[in-house]
Amino acid sequence: MHFVLSALVALLALLDLMLGVGFLVNPAASGADFGLSAVDALNGGAEGLSAMRADFTAFFLVAAGFMGLGAWRRRGDVLTVPLALFAIAFTGRLINLLVVGSYEGWWLPMAVELGHVAILALAIKVWPWRRRRSKFRAG
Image (cartoon, rainbow, N blue to C red; front, side, top):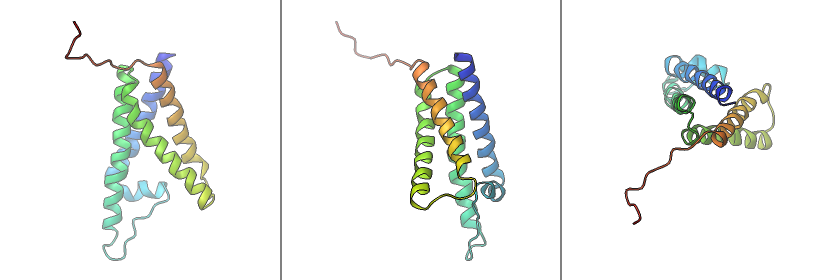
């Protein structure tokens, strides 16, 4: 169970690493895969590309880094960061689905985010957490 869970978390980390690097190297193409366009009439798209390059890269690389570390060391506490990222992303998409409505292919990113949440939550439950040693000992 621990090995399979480590492999799943590592594979998700690899996916997120590829997405993060894609946004860093070519935000226009990666953004298009997410239904985003960097069109900005005043700046020729520079502001939109900058936002995609910074924000999406940060999201995916931070998630990938913590998931990779968590999978390597099998530590549940490290996975709380990517769990929070993907749970909030899923919640935002769910709210958009309820308020704005569906669009073609709406279910795929939600399924990926929900898959992240489910696997990370299971790993957090199964894997140990690092215990802090108190500097102050009784007695």
